[in-house]
Image 1: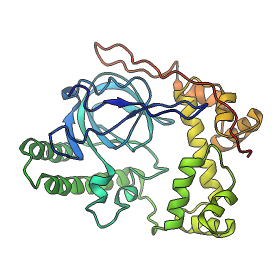
Image 2: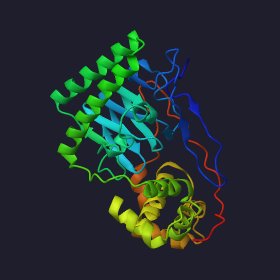
Image 3: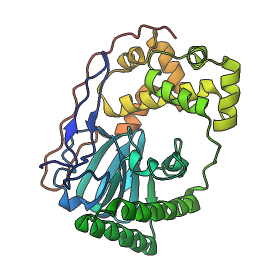
Length: 332
């Protein structure tokens, strides 16, 4: 099947929103369902064909073996060079500006891990996949590169043979590799704070992900969850070490950064699309949360211009067309 890795599927956009292209996992590339794959970029001609900014619906870990340039993930700009490892979580907006890219690409769905591992939140506890991680990139030593590639090639051998128990063998190698990656990552960036799971807080985070553009008040979320705003704040402080209102503000700021970095929407359109009635108030909100004005952030995030796909011999990918934003129905 052509374009199996980046078989782009664009979901229906929300009114007044900018929607990046969505890339789904090809579950039946090998005939029967397999929710993990391991391949070099050079073996995936469509890897750099995703048009402009896009999001993945699966986890992706790429060890760069050749090529240089920039990889943008949400508001972070990562250097692309041999030996750099790049981590992408589902839903993060990404764009490439690279020349001659090749690398070992490991990608898998969350259910491939969750359906077998005792801890359903195992991936969330890994420092390089946690929200608020210090960086989406990790530069490996030569010894670490060899260790990564040895396990990567073991996965490739399992996939080529595709025995009946291949999924079990692949999970075993993946688990070992993820533990190693977490050790290497925390050695450079420090250990992530591990907190016990809380079902109410996890539901709250899912609601904020879904409704942040139309509901800004903690009281609205607390009402749907059946708890008081004070209790929800206490739960968030215990599980996340931050208040419920900060969770909402951080999610709004993240979405604003994505739109400023990857879309052509004006700051006013972004403000209305995120539920702010007054663009001036949005600008003050963003400056307070991000430390700079929206225009300054956009200039910094995009550099001299919008990042484009510039693989050797390939034309830059087209950008999704921005759609005018409309005011959200609910006031802040």
